[in-house]
Image (cartoon, rainbow, N blue to C red; front, side):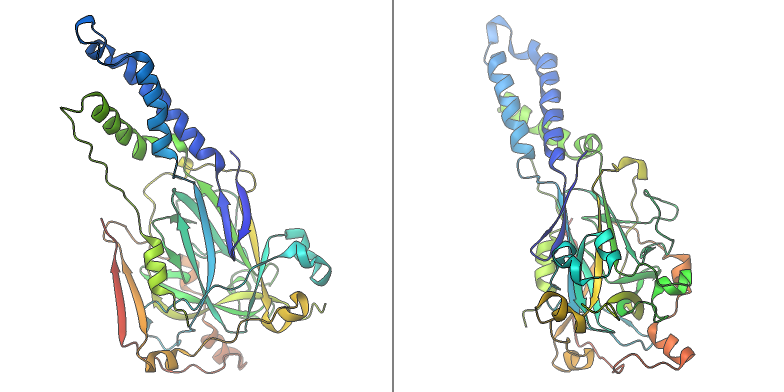
Length: 398
């Protein structure tokens, strides 16, 4: 199965163009089987109220109606946000302050390290010690692997081909609306913080002893369409068919199911060549309340497709303008200033999902503040106290 990977409106997008076609074909096949199974009920000489031609035409129409709006894609954008204090407290989710700009690496290959061109993908600018979170959007089940410096942000294991359930090395979309950091405990993450590669502060360097990759790695695996069809489409096809075939007996009762990520994301968002020191990696910041949800499917239920990877390079904001000609975004406000103005923080809860326990290796990683104390190196601009006053809570609609 083919995946189209692209950069669209400052988002990394994975499109699965064959999914809808496959679901449509499965639906037509199933309804043709219904035609054969049910024909004794409506093709008798004394009750010929539906013809075979009508049924076959209606089967194609229903198959199109059930799959037409299912564009089968997953998109990831990178949100600027507050760097929360690393003071031992567990903070709620900070807001989104707008997307980081994304550019294709190929457009600036003559001004970038050769390794970036070899890996391809996209790049975005980050200030040192700036924080980010990733927002996910999907209308079809996708297992998304996410690594930082080729270290899985969910399990803490080194990047490897394929999906794993023991430990789980991916997030399931659309169940997981976002990820803000490394899953260090059940319901707790440590915030993603940008630091120069080879500074000794990145999680990659802590767990592997070297700064080789940096950046963010993404890989998408769509659910097998036959499994999705059995879970979601077959019953809807039956209901549509029965309502049309026997309108006097069966009422159509279709309910739209979805996470509503867009609504939550909009509420959380606020409108408000020299190679030296270009490359950035991600380090661990303060503690935050966030659940990474467990998948109840088998990893073999997903399809490994060609073209399902994307490397997102993190570029030092001081070098961004020299490389691209565009000014980088200004530094975000401090968490203290944000809280002082009474602006909202966020919480999200889905009672139907089980939270992962956190990666064993990630539990042992040190935060930037802890490494500052160990090494005597001062890299943070100042860890100010934050007192969230307004916390907006979201409970997923059933």
